[in-house]
Length: 303
Ligand SMILES: CCC/C=C/C(=O)SCCNC(=O)CCNC(=O)[C@H](O)C(C)(C)COP(=O)([O-])OP(=O)([O-])OC[C@H]1O[C@@H](n2cnc3c(N)ncnc32)[C@H](O)[C@@H]1OP(=O)([O-])[O-]
Image 1 (cartoon, helix red, strand yellow):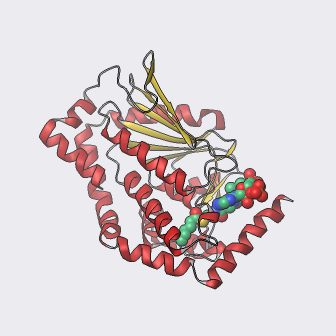
Image 2 (image 1 turned 120 degrees about the horizontal axis):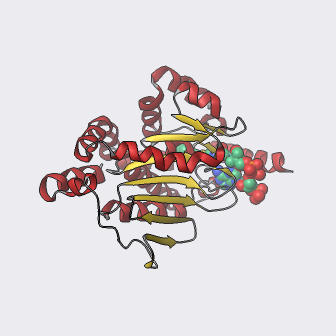
């Protein structure tokens, strides 16, 4: 929300959005190390790479945290920092999120961050989860998820927080908010993001049953917007971005803000309670037992 409001404010005060809609300087530095190669600027770090093409204004964020791009505290922190840098960069108009790993977009929150950890750690972790979502759902940029693999739970949330979702047309890939299957509960803002995307009835069925949907089923219910061949997911995402850029930036940003503000404000005004609820819940013996069993089931499945 802060980003969305910043974007809108800078439109009226400094014409930021005008520069967004009317083109940007062809060379712009982004990230560390600041190495320019032609019109492309790259930065890489341990959990993801970020490439901003200053000729198009599109940043490509590729997750590369093997084995499954799980959202650890480090991952979430790096993600939020990168998104903030892009948000501040006048040359960046849109971000594509995708995975550099085969078959996986993101396995969601890293269960090891929630199992056997101190309440202080759980608090810090949950704050980072909130931060990731607030920055992404509230981004003034156009955000497209290029979902080139499975995307359960927190991975699905990341995709849901984007403006548009394109998934690889592969029935083996699944997506959804499956938290109840782990014996845990998706908080109200996960739920609201889902309701805002697929409607109340579908969200209620999905969340209660912790359903994961194959890519074709996800398209049918509106959880993703488009299916394309796996090799075309990223190129389609950048092509799609052009359509979104064609709309006057200030009008699109205000509309996005109006649509998303109630959900964002609800979390902002209940942030501390939400953290306390999470810490109290996740550190319960019964919940820790459920997480342990779930991790064991993942290991058994692998063996
Ligand atoms: C209130 C809270 C809200 C919670 C929200 C959440 O997001 S909760 C999260 C809900 N998320 C889920 O329910 C998703 C659970 N994961 C899966 O369903 C599958 O791993 C997969 C479909 C993502 C990939 O299948 P695949 O056959 O390609 O891979 P594989 O299965 O062989 O796994 C490889 C290794 O990664 C490990 N690992 C995996 N996920 C996680 C994780 N989240 N964390 C940590 N580790 C994880 C797995 O144990 C194994 O480790 P090992 O034995 O090598 O040390």
